[in-house]
Image (tube, rainbow, N blue to C red; front, side, top):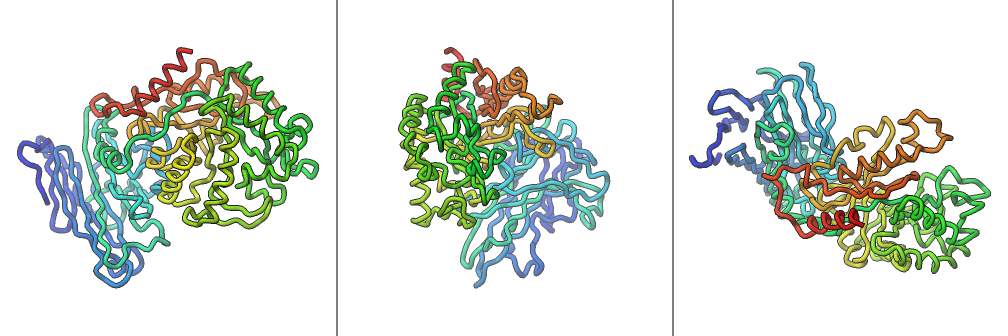
Length: 552
């Protein structure tokens, strides 16, 4: 164990015992904050235990406000091995603590072990959590734990959970711990013969500012993240978006096999694109919305509805004569809207489909030349329409490290396009693409509906663009209205204003006046000055863009 130098010693005393268990005490009071709970810093995983794992070398380094644990693995055998699970255990908090929801906006949530083992919650990173971090708070003392590892190189997720163990690990009393299960994906090969890997767990303690101390404990992760992935690499557009549902599943019928909405007035299969363009122009005149996203622009599958929305979000027009011949008109409209004004939603973007409404599909392989050609064909057609925003629906089917490199490929080929990932992507994906959350939702979705600014994104990715969907159906449900009634415009606008003030870009699946509604640069308010980074180029540009639109 490496101790802090005398001039770097803080109020904490950090010790590692001979069984690789940590203890942390307050120097002044002697109060235990972490005490050995029989849970070592590393534990083997799998049915064959240590025999199937590489046991890492462990180095603990004391710092002024906590400690770092570095795990170094080297596989000197002839077979792949597992990595095991990392722990920060023995947290001496009571049965009820406050943690943060990092598969959502970062709000606090109560955890109660009720004097019993508690293993509720937890999630994967990437694939669920925004970042591989966890926080615990009791009263004014906050503990923040982060895992630093090169995801793009090691190519595996980790399962993160705040828990209260049972059995032998409660021998000296109930306690809390944070676990990082490195072998979270059973299909991952583990560490290969001859390979060396390093993982670092940082643990920081802060007190005196319960509202913001959790961010201070995550500064080591922020610093690592910045070196690994840099700043946001796109220009944020704070203007709200109107979703235009060209088709939806409720409109599917034998007479309307592509499910085009308002088929007797606006079907592109019959009328081309003029009716929809007229509708969008009218929306601008009535509500001042100046960004549009066409959803299901080529229609829906009739026979294989489980595969909606189709991969063929532009090439699907080739069978529709009127829609195909009307594309020149749509292209002129896209050009008229300007940068960021016209978008197309690419359904099932990671599921390659050879034919229209067929059962077969293949997971996109960005290294497969045929797959790349099919994807580029779809996007080339979007580019010809002056689509400057493309939604990437269910890109989460790709491993996040593959999605990252695929996004870099797409951005290089289509530099004028902004991409939007849905569902919410991991922190490193947010540097390359805007992200998408639900601003309204059902009771089952409430955990992920924003209740305030996207705090961790503000901290890690100032200048980020995050869309929040406003759905008329949910607005009506919250207002106690029947579904056949219209969503009151004042309620839709109120939700749009609320989300924009929190820093989200509203995407409206509803009608409302959005004059003066622009996503605020929320990181200016949500991040304390003492840990706010120097202004990056994109952060400054995003703030300036908001001010420019507000002044118009």
